[in-house]
Image (tube, rainbow, N blue to C red; front, side, top):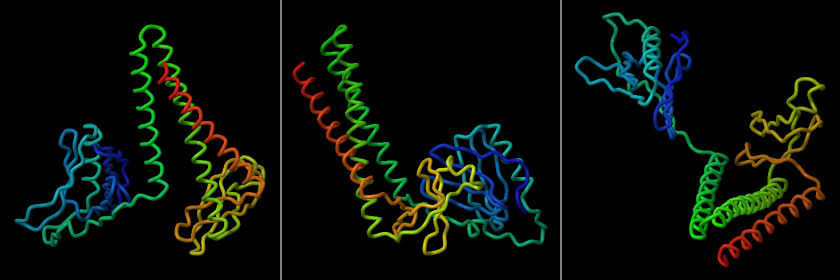
Length: 277
């Protein structure tokens, strides 16, 4: 019996999410997802700021319980009431099955794109902390208005140097990936996802189909072309790049290299200024 009444999505601690989904509850954690059919649930209890999903069990057996903590008390009560109303009715003569055997567990693996974003966020945070620490250290050592100005210059200069270096390095990496995929990947035509011709110039989303027949989308920014050529990795069809002309590729590489060199030079100059101050 599907859940039709409005049920809040419970956002718990440690990135845990509990929500309804077509006759079942989905309990999502960072590295796994549990699908709990309503037939496997005995009842749902609201316990303050936590929700306990008690599974069915044979008479005399201890039922398994899945808990989600750190949620809103009001949302927990509303969630428990709505799910309990939607549970299938059981007659006394019905055989009670072990609900744990009906739960489907799926491990969630991190994609390469998600892994790169995570590494980038951690790297950006580490660089930011180093810049702030250096600014505070030299600013406090200098003292007075001179120290304050030195701290400001260090933070601004460090941010510019870090952004330029990271941008240049990322540009070169993207250029290398594009060069590899256009030569070793599979090239196909991608169609503009806009529904009408009047929207083509505002659309930046294109649809391509891999060799398995799966349609995939990619965003490249604004363009008026109805179709473009893209190349994707046969081992990871979601990894895709657009074809660039030889001239555009050379210009892109030169700009990225210039940005990287500027960032490194600016970083060196900033370090020398702090050392000699």
